Length: 275
Image 1 (spheres, rainbow, N blue to C red):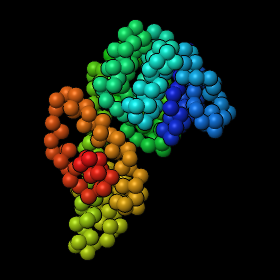
Image 2 (cartoon, rainbow, N blue to C red):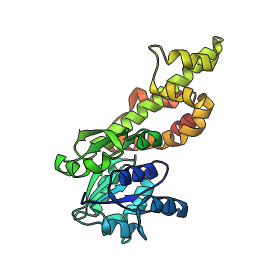
Image 3 (cartoon, rainbow, N blue to C red):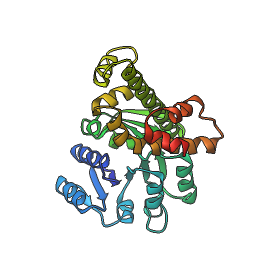
Image 4 (tube, rainbow, N blue to C red):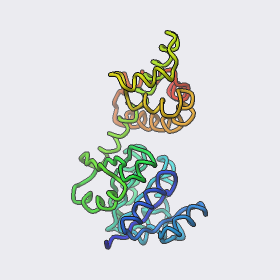
């Protein structure tokens, strides 16, 4: 394997990605701000770069796994950012769930720089560790062919969605649908309570019936709506905001999905949608 893989964002999702890449025999160069992460991945076999610019200069393929557009823009921009320092021949694979507009601006600001691939993910850290993360990828097939072996170290399936930006837009629709499904599942729990059905019994039973959904299973897995709200709402708020921004950029009405998200009982989502 000749491509050097650079990695930025070795957090909850990124660290197991790096471990899978190392396990598959890739030469991985990382930059991480947290010393404990640097030490763990250094022991695991990753080369520890000194800065964002340093890892970008070394990478043939640069994987970026960040929480938000704001973080992505921060690390991409400026003379010390990864776009200014990456090889012109490099490919940057962005796993960040944000807006196509942000990626397009990053690309426009560096017209002679590396090629960008939008590659949002669906799954958990456990899925990554098992090599079963779902990754959507948008871009020209020749470009995607260059990165599929690296991404395939932790992802299966890898779904090619078409032109640049299509994967990110598809992921945003998916996340809005998941948020709407979560509100519907929470409303079902409320209805069950009014009918005298315990939430645990309702969630367990519907998981085996035609009304089941991934959102309902997620609520059941963490122990109920309140716990789900606490742990999932920060991520869903961010994704709903990104979907809203993407729709505004495209002049598209989110329609009933947005209405369900805004009108449901999960407080964290309602607070954002009505704010």
